[in-house]
Every structure is written in structure tokens, then in C-alpha cells.
Image (cartoon, rainbow, N blue to C red; front, top):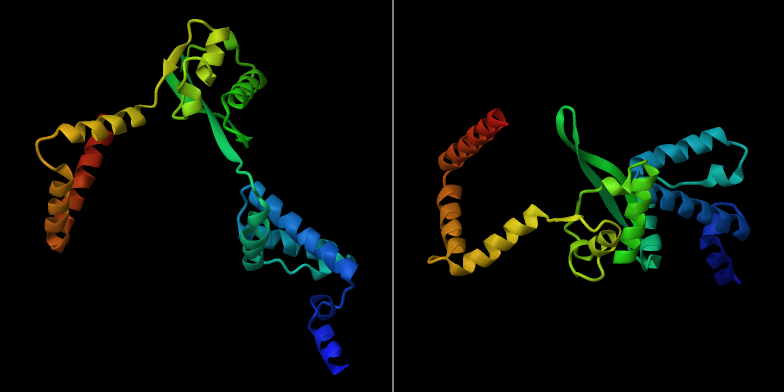
Length: 231
């Protein structure tokens, strides 16, 4: 009998002085609040402030009164409760446009879209929707490119291939960073010396002396200033 009473006193619903049904509702509210905090890319500090405001705005609500979801608890719910149940990844895809204006070439982010699958068909539909939603004429699209393989790779079924069916004169854009990376990666194999060993020797020479490190830092600052002047 004492054991049963002891176990009963350790239950969380008894500790919060709420019924099991109210506790389930409380857990659901806290989980939902944390879910939308993460989904909307808000910080846990912002989440904690929101909870405090809710408790002050609804003092007569037993659910609002018993919410205790600060930033530490919110992180634990997100990482240890919600994350293991999320079996699919949702990726943020930026749609970037570049165009000519009266003052020269301009570029900027048109919109961010959430996409669970990175298939060529899904990307094609979403990109086409974003262009139409922003009242951009599809027949004025000149070039399309990305560092995503489903966009550029494959001559028959890729985002570029699907757009090319609508716009036969479309030009394929490339990611210059990937081109540069591949050039260095494959060019390194044909060098007459080991550039990695040379870099390690230079690093070892510089890091042993604070004077050398400071001189190198000053040199980098000078180069950065020089490049800013050129720009």
C-alpha cells in the first residue's frame, strides 16, 4: 500500500496537480509550440518569451498557467521528442534571380521554399510556381543553373531539361565554385610537388611564432583592403 502511494506521488500529473487528461493537453500544447518555433526558425529565447506572454495574457486558463517550457526544456523537446519522430528532411531551397536594370546587373533572393523531396519534377514545379507568383514571365527566362545535381545533371530528366522543353533556347548555368573546386581537385593530381605537404610546412613555420602570425594577419588585412578598393 505504501509502495503504491509512493509511486503515485512520483507521477508528474500529481506533481503538477492536474488530471491525466489535462496533462496530455499540456504536453500537446508544449510540443506544438516547440514544433512551430523550430519550423518558423525562431530562437528558443524567443520561444520562452512567447510562453511568458501567453501565461500573462491567459491567467484563467489552467493549461496556460501550467506551461513551463523555457528555452532549455524547448530544446530538449525539439531534440529528444520531436526530432526522433521526424523521419523526413525538409530542405530550404532559395530561388535567386539575376537580371539587368537601368543601373546594371542586379541579383537577389526571390523567395525561400520548403521542399521535402529534391526530385527534378518537384523542383521544376516549385520554381515555375515561384516565378509565376512573382509575375515573372517564363518566356523571358534566359539561363538556369544550380549546384544541385537534379537541376543540371542529366540531359533527359533534370530541372534544366524540363525547362528546356518549354524554352528551347535556355542556357545552362553552372556553379563556378564547384568548377573551381573540381579544377583544383583534379589539377592537384598532376602537380610535380605535394601542395598539401607544402601548406603544412608553411603552417608549421607560421604558427610557432606570434610575430610571424601577426605579420601574416597584417598581410591578409592589407590584401582585403586592396581588394575592397578595386571593387
